[in-house]
Length: 316
Image (cartoon, rainbow, N blue to C red; front, side):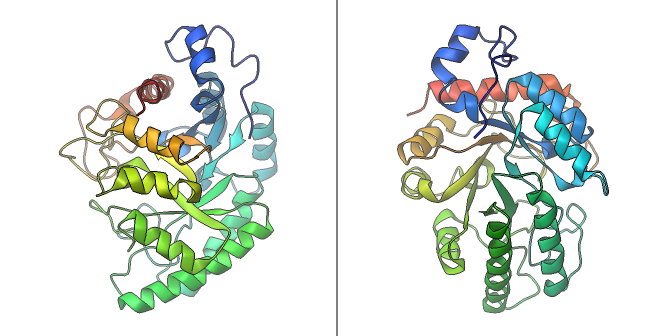
């Protein structure tokens, strides 16, 4: 895991907090494991994201394949290496063996064989950036018998997992609460663990606060399954949400984030904490007047990190 350089631990830490607090309380814990998902920054280029994220003091970037440019991967890999950032929980353009509903966000063919072929292509492309893990979901079973959908997803993800491992990386499977979206037929942490057991080794859980925070038994389940978690995405929950893309910054919503962080720590989780929000400014059909995407991105990242670090100090 890549830690912060001496420059990143300098006086301008980007969090609006005294430097001695940052170093003393966070440098050996969450501070060195902060990452930013490029999907949280929808209007910037890959290179702009590298600059923004590095300046924030984070040490990781969750690369979105949508920001890679055909034929320029080598140059972008060089830019990543020059930035000193690690590739963390990366997002492929082709992320599921079954279709996503609606398909406007992650478009792709309906046929599972074609989807698998596209997934494998995305894994090969992202693996060039040496990611910690690559996100995947099952997709929707709305057009299938439940048993058939599960069989398709298990077999496809076994093949995708084998490829990822052969390329020196791994897959992280995300469950989905499907608020206005249908991205997964897995709805809870325990059933996702059962599904992972069916696939086999080389694939773990992507733990997104947004999808899991209010489950029954989430604190004991988080602690129990922490060793299966390959990455954490953090955010907060507005009650009620005004659209499927109405996430909040940590501390601004109703999640008990300190409890989640405490359970992750007690369970032994030592991976990345990746900032991921969606806050529709009209591009997805709902123009939220206070969309977080209207905030300058450097300030957005600063507020996100500060909120998580505050919750870390309060973890229980």
